[in-house]
Length: 143
Image 1 (cartoon, helix red, strand yellow):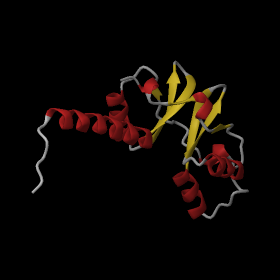
Image 2 (image 1 turned 180 degrees about the horizontal axis):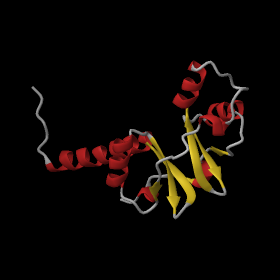
Image 3 (image 1 turned 90 degrees about the horizontal axis):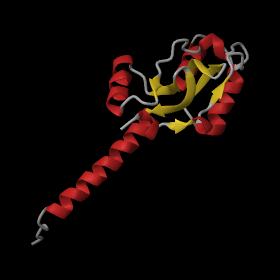
């Protein structure tokens, strides 16, 4: 299954410019109920900020008004291509220890896929498999 089949599309992606204030980033996360904001420049991923990145900035004694997105963003976000398979996506996420990956077609940002999206996919697939088992197995007898 290609990543494009499970990724959240561009319209659902929460993004901001590198010059956005950390206050704006936090407000976006709160308004959209997400744990990350993709920082983009010229429709390409320039970075990513997670809720953990913000927590770490605060632990260093910074405030919302001290920082811009470009000050704390991960400048080399790991990305996945729309045509990559879900297995490769999972391997890449595990290799880099990330839970969120911007999706690109060429260099252009087209969406995002998260660990949560994979859990939902796995739940759907397990449900489908359990239905196969139920229909192919004899009924359980209760005493």
